[in-house]
Amino acid sequence: MVAVHSEVDVKETHEQYDYVVIGAGIVGMATACELQRRQPHASIVVLEKERAVALHQTGRNSGVIHAGVYYAPGSLKAQFCTQGNRETKAFCRQHDIPFEECGKLIVATQAAELPQLDILLERCHLNGIEAIKLDANALKQKEPNVTGLAALWVSDSAIVNYQRIVQVMAQEFVSRGGEIRFEVNIVAIHESKGVQVQCQQGTIDGKQLIACAGLMADRLVTLCGIEADFRILPFKGEYFLLDQKHNQVVDHLIYPVPDPKMPFLGVHLTKMIDGTVTVGPNAVLSLKREGYKKWDWAFKDSIEIFSYAGFWRVITKYWRSVFCEIKNSISMRGYLKRVNQYCPSIELHDLQPYPCGIRAQAVSIKGELLSDFHFQSSQYTFHVCNAPSPAATSALPIARYIVDKVMDKD
Image 1 (spheres, rainbow, N blue to C red):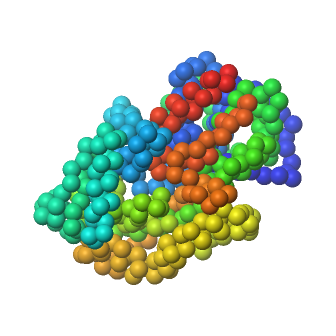
Image 2 (cartoon, one colour; image 1 turned 30 degrees about the vertical axis):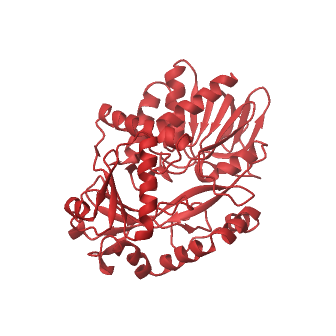
Image 3 (cartoon, helix red, strand yellow; image 1 turned 135 degrees about the horizontal axis):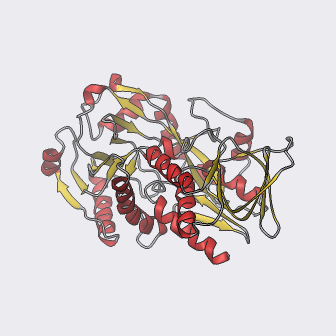
């Protein structure tokens, strides 16, 4: 992630690198490591506005290593997720990072959801994912505390601490000669026989720039003088932590059947790698891109949202879902009702506070929620514009894709 500033004092110093990577989340660090692997003698610097790696989307997600159930066959999401599932687990084994292959159950609680469950089963087969459909009795045997008409069992899903993965990537990158600069505030970016990144701390020159800026992706594109074909809308995902007595309430990840018209997966029960269980997330529009408190808002972020025609087209198209998400955010009882559809034993007092996350959702001017990974580029820059879930799972193959594209330009 990166801070973008204007009208500030800038030091008049210049430093030269072969590659400049903006953002030290999992996609940025995986990309820097892949560049280093292919070009071990290249000088590479990662610029990060925070004091440490993975403090935003990477460090504030549910920690699931996805199998790739939901994604359209042939899409980048489907391709990268299935590859990333295997490679993330291999990375964890190589570096002794704890993870658990607990598997996932996608539970249908209403008859109207059964056709969608069959569609997901077929999608699993097309994407090369092992999945088994369970009836109500088989589901109850597998998860006594979960109620449903049927479920899809996906054994490849797992859990991990992604922040730990990025910390290991950063350590490896630095040990091999890479450089990470924290608390960097970017003022301007210019292209001229390379790229010049003007920071408050001085100017950094690079032959190529790769921006993996997450919630600030559209601002980086614009700062580089490229016309962004999207705008980032921040959606807050609110979670709750279950009371400790419910740490064994489920043995697997429990997901509802998702609405095929929406890119969000709904409120689910997630086993965490530390042994706790969380409930969430919902998806509520945030009026601040990095606003993790309940009522956080920022004037600039709010103006950008409400002045964007694509936002109003999204609201018009999905107003029922928007209203429902807001209502359930305000009322814990509404949130609990969604959980009780498949896990009736959880009560209101079991829901305890837990840090929220904010999803960077790219939206087109036509009001389309971009569902697949999306990139833009210029002669000397490459931008990761939309990298929603399963970006953490998919980070290693995404990094290879990015570096392939950048190497083609060299």
